[in-house]
Structure formats: structure tokens, C-alpha cells
Length: 134
Image 1: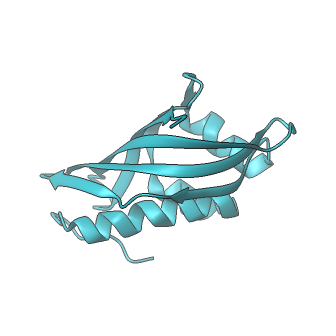
Image 2 (image 1 turned 60 degrees about the horizontal axis):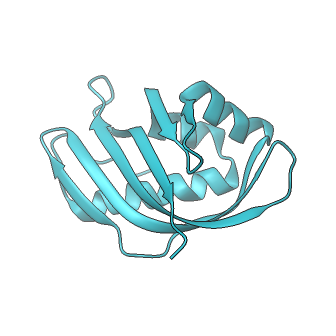
């Protein structure tokens, strides 16, 4: 994996980081997901619920949260400076929760990255997904 260098604010590198994260969610790649998410990661899902890192990544690992599709359908917009970055985009998602049927949705995302002080890598710390019906 190509890490984003200390102090890097290249939007292209952050774009690639987010795309790797989405692919890892679909592939249920626990090792990569562990590396890409901060220890204090929080997701606010499209239903408005708040999932912490243990619940979210644990659900991906055990299959109770199962993405069949999760991809950006708009260009990723990136703002980054001094160890903090925000990535904004719209996605298409197909997901099954708790063994239920797959549901398709379109969502807007704001994903906040922070540069990890110990590893010097960018890690997702907050993720907000808002369902979009248009």
C-alpha cells in the first residue's frame, strides 16, 4: 500500500486512499480496513445511526455488514491541510445488514481524515453518509 507521506496534501493521493478504503469495504479486507481507520473512527450511516470502529469493522469482518457495491459515482473533492483532510463525493451502494436482503442506495459522503501521529499515515476518523433520493 502506498501511504500518504508526512505533510502531504496532494488531493490525488487522498482520492486514491479513499478509493482503496471503499474497495476494502467491499472485499471485507480486515487488515487493510484496520490500517485505514483511526482507532476512534465513527460512522454516521445513511439511517442516522452512529457506529463506532469496533461495530462497523467487526460487522464487515463477520459478514453482518456486507457491501456488494460501494463506489464513488462523482469525482472526489478533497480539501487537505496540516494533518487534516476532508473528502466529499456521491456513491452508489449495495448493502445487506444482518443477513437481510441487499438494498441499493445513493449517498453523499463527507469523510474526515487525520494524519496519525504514530504511523504518519492518513486514517479515516469520521465518516458521514447521507442518503440521496435525487
